[in-house]
Amino acid sequence: MGFALSTIQLKSLTFENNGHMPSKHSNEAEDISPALSWENPPEGTKSYALICHDPDAPLVTPNGSYGFVHWVLYNIPADVTELAEGTSQFTQGLNNFGNTGYNGPLPPEGHGLHHYYFWILALDKQTDLKSGLTLWELLESIEPNILGMNRLVGIYQR
Image (cartoon, rainbow, N blue to C red):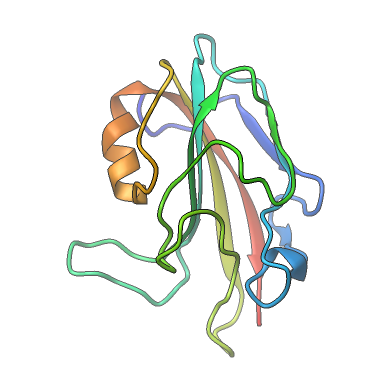
């Protein structure tokens, strides 16, 4: 199916879709990942991956990438349907801060509202990928196995 929205729904207890993210999830405060949960995965889902990306960040690279990656998480088994706040479970990839794991919003001062896209990707196979993959390495590895995906958008401003 590739990169098409599907029936899977991603939610957070701390902010609504297109709602303001609490500062505790930002790099200005506690910098902990939000609690997330999902439901209605596509039939045949065997595992999940999750990413958080800010397309409003003023970063463009020579290879055509844009925005800023805040979190890359994968090797999540199909029986998992929620992540606790501040989770360190499963396999963490490399974000654009140069760290593995979650690093929250930190838009440039005065740059206005930024949108943080949390994407849940349902896969048709279990994965056992090494830690430290970038967003693009992860997507290259899993693209043929994506059954469906959906997003939750949080907004944040400094």
